[in-house]
Every structure is written in C-alpha cells, then in structure tokens.
Image (cartoon, rainbow, N blue to C red; front, side, top):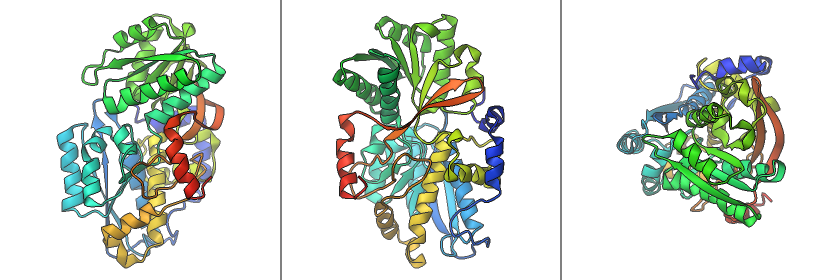
Length: 417
C-alpha cells in the first residue's frame, strides 16, 4: 500500500466534489493574479523520506502554497525561493541539510519542516542562528520545547492524549497499552503522558516499545496484550500502525480491545489498506480538521494542492499543516516592509509576533510568542475509520493534562483566552 496515494482515497471517499468546488477560487497571498518579479526571498524546508516513512507531504503542501503566492504577487512583489532538503531520517544528513539552508543559502526562515530526526539534531542550530522554523510535522519533544521551532501540527503527545481521553470517556477504557517507538523524545515521551493522564483519572497504562531500526510489531502487540490492557494505542507512523492491525487481525483480536491511534492513521488511504475487518473499530485523533468538515481553508487547501501541487502529493494532516505554516508565514511577511525580508532577525521578530491567526483547519488560534516552548495546537477531532473513509465522532476538544498549563498561561497573556 502506497500511503502517498491520498488523492485516490479522496475519490473513494466521494469528496472530489469538495475539491472541485474549491478549485474554482484558489486564494493565497495578495491574490493579484500577477506573477511576482522582484528579488527572491530564500525560505528553506526539511522533510524526511526513508525508513520509517515518507513525511514529504508537509513540504509538498508548503511548496504548493508558495507557488500560488508567487503567481499572485509574491510577498509585496517579491517571489519566494523555496528550497527543500531531505534528511533521509539520518542525523548526519539532517545536520548537513540545516547547514546548507541556514549557512550557505542564507534562508531567512524555514517553513513546512516534517521530520523528528532533523528537529532533534538541529534545534540548537536554529537557536544559535536566530532563525525561526514554522514546522508542520513535529513528532519529538525538542520540536515543542524549543525557542525557535513552532508547529501547526500537535505532535504525538497531544494527539495520543486526545485519543486516550476519548477512549476513557466514551469507550470505557481503564487500562491503555501504548505501542510506540523506543525513542526517548518520541515514543517514551508521549506514551508516558498517556500513562500519567490515565493515572490522574483513576485508570492505568503501560508502554510496549519498538526498536525503530528493526520494529517487531508482533512482539509489541503480544506485550501490550499481556499487560492486561483493555485498549491498544498505536502511537506509530501509519505503516507500522497498519502492521499492528494486520497482526491483530491474524489473531482475531478486534473485539477484545478498543483500538485507538494518533493522527498518522488519519491518512485517506488507510481505510482501504486495513480493510473491512476493522470497519467502525478504530478511532483516530485528527490534529487538524478532517476533510469532511469542509470549511473555507479546508477547501482552499485542496484547491491549492490541485492547482499547484502534484497529483500524488498526499492530502493528509501533514499536508494541511504545511499549507497552514506557509499561509501563516505569508500573512506575517506581507505585513513587513519588503526591504526587511532579507534580514533574518527582522523576519524572526515578525514570526514571533504572530498572535491570534485563525483557520477552520485548527481548533484554536495560532500564535508564536517569545518563549522556550511552543505548542499552539492542542485540541482536535476524533474520527472513526469506516468503509472507505472516516466518520467524525467528536469535534474540537481540549485535553486533560498538566502538560498544557504553561501554554494556557501564555495564551492568557496574549489575550487568546
């Protein structure tokens, strides 16, 4: 199964009419209808493609949005020169990609990043260089515990909490086994948050960790079952989560447990990949609005992808995140003096000044601010996988965790609460 064929899944879901409606009125930037001809503004982006997966949909979407901006006046007449690097899930390649974009290409900001390797490797580099990263597919603690990285996606910790909270409140979950990658700032970090939340609410939990270099999903599934859990949380990239479901199907475990997952399983090709056996049995937290919600930005995202992206670019949550990051950057840049767009420090200040940006794709306002941590997105949807698609079973909901207390304090100071 090729998870990049999200467009074909859109057809299966019968939502091509949505894309058709949206394509009639693509909007981005100044919407002048005239190509930008001024001096280019260099913006970078880093994605990961290799084992354990292809996360290029975030930079694909940012590239599509920026292409639309360039066709519609650019940033006050200046086009965006968007340069993208692949870290291949390798620390050395991640460091080289950041060095090229930040030091050699003199990018004034990075937008649309999607990789947990590069953010772990490069968080200090970005801080030292005074450059902001408006990421779209974060999955490790460094991404959310950094002064110079902010993402439109939630990451695994809030997404896991959202799925677990729904299971506890609506599916009767009392004991959740979290299957995750044995990476301290990824699987361990986010699974522990679920265990802490369940303990706080009178339940319990455990974690079964996979070796990211050689994941044995059967062993992890057996460990989760042996824990006495009543709910299995697949805190994994989509490909590995699907492998867990296939292994569970072989053992006919479907009806013995609640099955929940964070956002990676909200990929429009997943329902066909897991088959009818799982119809109505898997609940997924969606960090951004599901396609069926069909608000103005949701329609415009699809329209931009149809008009300026490639047919096989995924239409998934990370793509939505890339679109939003590029849109929010463009909005902040358009408010600047065009002459200042070559000054990294001034661009960084403009990004940090973002507050109260709204989109129907996000449950709450997007903001940055000048803090050592950033997580503006910490509320989302729950969808249930059904034949050929997803059914929304819970709309925007915030999560019960002490982790968000300091973020809420920042939001109060910014007047966003």
